[in-house]
Length: 194
Image (cartoon, rainbow, N blue to C red):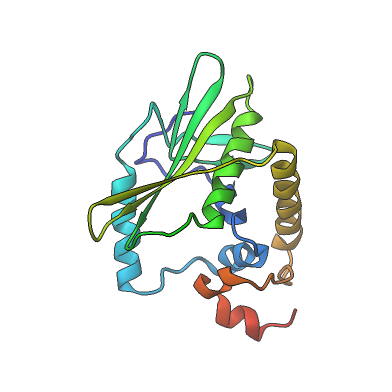
């Protein structure tokens, strides 16, 4: 389950494609590529990638596969009973008032993938940690996981929608919401039908 942080992610489908409310966003990323909008964002991504290299727990960025998809949680620690601590690190420019829902979804999907391993791994404690880069502050938000059946149902619905659309030229239906504001495909998305 371990991989070096210098190694690229496994090729193929990664749960990061399904963490936003809108599966259409992932479809556009796949079809058109995910471009980094501007130099400042590119520097922010580069800086975050470098900082991600620092491990915190025993398992740093393990590659976990299930059902044809891959997940790469930042930090995992598993005890002798198969119970896990899961930490997702995010590097941001300013402090957060609350945890972003896409980050909660990411942690939930990671917990789902861990639960599908043999033997099953149960996430007991999960956190999203925001490291503020502009001044020294670390924010830790606990994530209360929903029941695994609900997480699995949502994952499988999004997976099915994404996989059903990926081979075609018609994007899945858009899901209009707050996440549209930080989507790099917003102009293209709203100029297309559907």
